Amino acid sequence: MTSASLKVLFATSEVHPLIKTGGLADVSGALPAALHALGVDIKILIPGYRQVLDRCQHATPFARLPNPFAPGEVDILEARLPDTSVSVLIVAYDAFFNRKGGPYQTASGGDWPDNALRFGLLSYVAAWLGSARNTSAWQPDIVHCNDWQTGLAPAYLRFWPGRKPPTIMTIHNLAYQGVFGPEVVKALHLPAESFKIQGLEYYGNLSFLKAGIFYCDRITTVSPTYAREIQQETLGFGMHGLLHERRSILSGIINGIDTQEWDPQQDAYLPQRYDAKHLSAKTQNKTALQAALGLHSEKNTPLVAIISRITYQKGSDITLGVIHELVREGVQFALLGSGDKVMELAFVELGHAHPGRISINIGYDENLSHRIEAGADMFLMPSRYEPCGLNQMYSQRYGTPPIAHATGGLSDTIVDATAENLAAGLATGFLFSAMTRQACADALRRAIALYHDPKGWRRVQIAALGRDFSWENSAQEYLKLYRSLAA
Image (cartoon, rainbow, N blue to C red; front, side, top):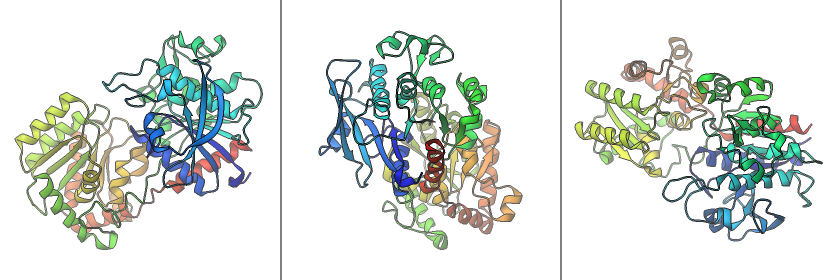
């Protein structure tokens, strides 16, 4: 089957630039666009949140079906993803989706109480479009589900009679599993026989994600190392046994990044653009960043950046200790992020204790994130686990070598600066294995030592700048998977 004849439904709960809370939205916007460029007839399926409807006011009717969970009908509207020719199908049911607040939570921060029905409907529509119930002219050859919010689609297709296109379940973060009480099984029109260990039952509850993992035809996750890690108890979040049992259909495909948006040669946010042949211009970005953040203007002082959610998962507790230790050795730090309020306060107090050496910026600023990537000398990512990660790829693309815990996608995308890799010109960053403050600090000191060897440091920067993290590579891997399933 050629890519031009492949029809793929890409079901997701968020897609950039229509609606975004995290990395899933970036993947859901970029991967379908890359697949479309390869000739795949792909349509993205997304709920009709208020933000989506506002951005897609010229959407046209595509299909209509009764809402199985509430009164009335569900309209499926078709629009285009902004600045692309990729089709977006919108599940329009105002009572479920057209409301103030975020996709998953109310404006006050609590989960929507009807999330099981809301994302049950998204899964139901994905299955409906793939099934014989869909009487439209377009019927997918593959239904590609993403994270727990679409996890029931493979279950519906398994139990419905008639046409059953192959299904893929992509796990972006196993920690989020869509767990609800057993009473929702009946409300979601799932057969009683599905509520068992060999099914969607999960410690007495229903898990959307387990349903997807159990009933799908192929499982993917966002890096090869993470695909192995989630089969172990430490990072399996209670599903390691099932994932190990299904390991023959489990694979990891590394995410890409938007190489147009993240390109130091054409980044409009930067005071000075640069490339591998003009790395001296990166120093001008550092000087401008130090001035903007209130740091001392010290050309030869290593400036370490952190752009991260401030959470235990991201190793923010480790980061606090490392900053406290290394700032006394003459290192500068710049942090941009938000999250745990107690740790936020600890970072702010640390910044106040070391003016001119530590800059703490609570919140998120797209402009500043680009300027930090370009102006910093190195980038710190001590995540306890990281399914894929993006900032380590952004950093390498900007010639800012990352220092990271050797886990998940960080292991797969960073070439550690061992003596052998340095001699071969392959090193692009620094990895540490033990998740301890000492191991992280030692890796940072290893980076700082090389930083003071300008020729050695330049070789690492040039190797990092030469990495290809474009979405085309990932799209080619998914295209191979689609073809194998469709065949």
